[in-house]
Length: 546
View 1 (tube, rainbow, N blue to C red):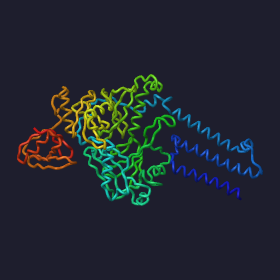
View 2 (view 1 turned 135 degrees about the vertical axis):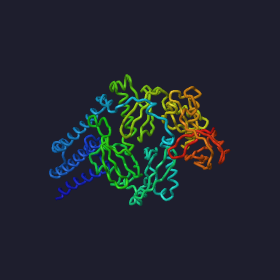
View 3 (view 1 turned 180 degrees about the horizontal axis):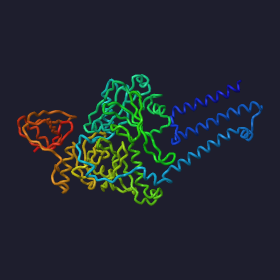
View 4 (view 1 turned 120 degrees about the vertical axis):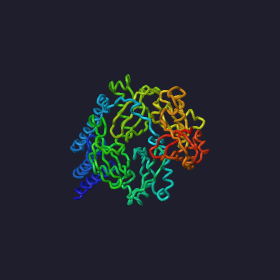
């Protein structure tokens, strides 16, 4: 009886330990999952060791003396089977890893991504500045933390997640981030109601909102136990291999969701990863719905991570002539530059990054745009400086101020491929903006506002014979008597809102732009003429007064 109790106790302990291991690591039960093979090896080793302990203890007692190592090994036949099974599993795992690698599958890896050659001037239209992100992620984090600090009813209990997903929300580029519990103790006292809000930042206007929810977010990365989003997904989909990165997004009504891509392996056991399906999880209710990757709703912007897309493009660019050529001869090998940014086109979010040779020179042969929802990829032949060179050139213009440039966006300004970037001080606050010509990166324009920066840049292009007029046909003109004029203060800068007789538009004149300061001399009834940029929110930005 005691022997049976001892044997069953060991078995129970092993099963409990294996259950805890699975609950903590939550591997997918799928032969394509590396975690599954690690768990399988752990299981075989644990059972083999448990059997050896039970068998050795029983036989030592029945024989009345200890066993020599040789006798014990001969007696424990199942232990030998366990060791053999462990080694066989390890060999299969190693063989699967090698046979799935680019070393033996270079051509298949190279074809994972289809790249379409396209025309820059046709695809990249000149856009209004209320539709492009003027801030990067680090600047968004500063705004989010500042906003959270002002929420006295929540700041002691919650923090802002570092998950700042850039999406298109109602045709506006925004970043969204959920709140997280400030500590395990704060989780314990607040988890019943859930997380009450998320942060939404307009990347064009810098307007930051803390969006409070009628029902709290109950499934998130900061939850413990079964409401942790990863464990919630695993128990609903035990065989799915979810991507390393899931995305926090909101739909058109502002409801928070987790967009959870499911990996698809196209080469061998572990190779050629793309995305095959997407699980959409309501962050409030936990309700899940799965879609084939081709059928995801249009409001979803993030399916393929920027890291996955750049990795797939690098396979396409470096493996044209095989794996060993990508290491040794490197003929025709191209790769992405060391950074990326996002741009909104046709209600989708595209990853932008430059393309350069693997030799490490300081010039681009072009750039790519990669759709994060569909994986559509377009290559544009635009030779010029790499982003790092453009950033250094912009910083050189303000070296006395010590500002640092953010990673640039690529814009079409007067038909010219142009790097656009923010210049930030040591505290990470945006102080100025810069435009740098891609092909002539010594052509740099700086401005305190985006409009001032663009005016200086277009003037620079005109001076160098690239365009024929300062406006280059991109601004509208207005003339009439002033019906009303009122000063307002926006983020510490004085603006004048002007309405003209027989016109419904409201014109915004920023006095921080030194070329517009003469607006202070005008009053109701005066005749005025100016150029302005159309805006989608009904307020038009004045760029010059005639």
